[in-house]
Amino acid sequence: MTLFLRALVGTVVVFLLNKTTAFNNAGSFSDNLAFFCRAIGFRYTIITGDIDGSSSLALSKAFSDRQLSYSMLNFNAAICKVDMNQDSVVILVSKGSIDKVDDFLKIIPHARIGRTVIGFTDKLSLAEEQTVFQTLHNFSTNGLFYLMYFSANNARLKVKEVITLNNLKKAVINDVQLSTAGKIRSPFNLQGAQLAAIVLPWAPYISMDNCFPDTSPGECQRHGLLVDMMDQMCQILNCTWTVVAPRDGNWGVRPDSGPFNRSGEWSGVLGGVVNGSYMFSLSQWVR
Image (cartoon, rainbow, N blue to C red; front, side, top):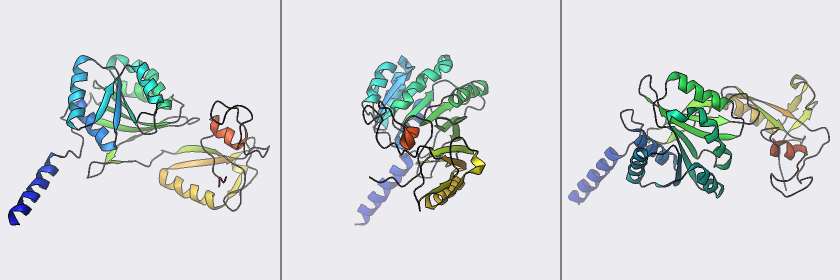
C-alpha cells in the first residue's frame, strides 16, 4: 500500500511539473500558440494564412505534442470550412502581410465567437503594433477573437482579447490573463464603450418614456428590472448603454418578406438588431 501511494504521488508530481500553465517568453511562437489553443479549449483547429515550410513543421510538432487536432488550408478553403461550422481558426500573418490584416479579418463573421486567433509569426515593432490596432479599430463587424505576437521592443509575448461591435467607434483590446491553473480569464473591461439597444416597453421588465431615435438620450426616462440589471452589468464591464423604442410600435418578430434569417427583410425591434443598427434588444422575449 505504501509503495502504491508513493508511486501515485510521484506520478502526480511528474504530471504537474510537465503541465505548462503560463506563456513562455523564451519559447517559440508555435509552442505558445499551441499552449494557448489548448488552454482556451480548441478542439479542432483550422490553420490558415501565411504558412511556409518551416512554420508548417513547427506548428505540426507543437500541436501534435499537445494532442490537438488541426488541418492547414489556404484562406479561401478555410472560409468554406468555417462556414460548415468548424470549431476554431488560427490565422498566421507574416510581417510582410501586416497591411493585409483587414483581408484576413473577413473570416471573423463566419467563425464562432471567441474561436479565432490571429497570430503574427514575426516580432512586431511599436509602430507595426499600432498599425494593427488601427486596422482593428476600423473593423466594424461584431466579433470576439484573440491576437498573439512577440514584441520587437522587449521580446515579450503579447496576447490580446479583441472585441469589435457594429457602431462602436473603436475595438476593445485587453491583455489576456491566465489563472494559476493555466485557464483563460476574461478581462471584463469594455473600456467605457457605449452599447446601443432597441426595445419596446414591457412592464415590469422595462418601462420607457420619450426614448425614440430622434430624441436626445438625456430626455429618455427608463426603469424596470432589466434596466437595473443593465446598470449593474455596465458597472462590472466598464461600459454605458442607451435604449430607444421604434415609433411604429413594431416588435418585428416576423420578416416583412423573405425567409426567417438574415436574407429576409426585417423591421421593428428585431429588425434593428438583425440589420445591425443596434447591438442588442433588452426585453422579456416570450413565444
